[in-house]
Image (cartoon, rainbow over all chains, first blue to last red; front, side, top):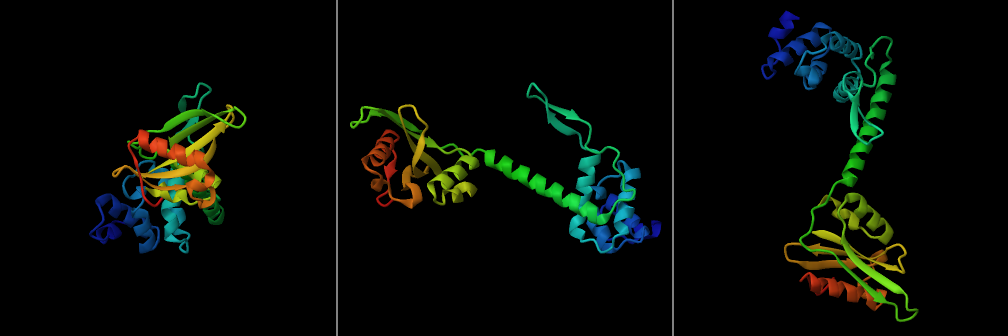
Length: 188
Length: 67
């Protein structure tokens, strides 16, 4: 490994060069080493007893698409180390233990892991989209409007209002109900 | 650009969307106004078009010649 460290590409930081040497020392490819160095493992060596097993595991699957390296590492990090946020009965957010603090790579199948990572990414993309839907659009300097009038026909009351659409979700609902493409303003 | 919704309700029922209105905030001009399925506002009877004009007057917003 010391020999690999000395031959690490010049653009790598010292911690990345150490990680590079570790991957090559485990008989991993340079492509895998590059991919791992670009993840959080290229920056720190905290919880190394676990992460070294991850590096070893990855070197044993040379046909794995390098695009999966970062998602796999983020998935492990989130499941094993990240405290989960849960909403208490009073509505306050509280932190609890990570989802799988005892997660290990013992007898883990790469195919099953890829499926888990895919599901995890799909879930987070959905959450991100939901959050985006609730995000506010810029408030206009033009205000709304309201008025009430009497229906000359039946004497009933008609109320009119003009309201700015302030969230992506409302904009999407407007476009859907009105059957036009106002949703395209969502990116503005 | 900001998007507004002109809505109407009868006798405290639920508000229903009638027009969608696009306003250019810089020029304070209504650039687009469309009813359901992209119909022009004046095809919806006098109510929506009058209310759009009343709102524009209240807010000192111009209605583009072609909306």
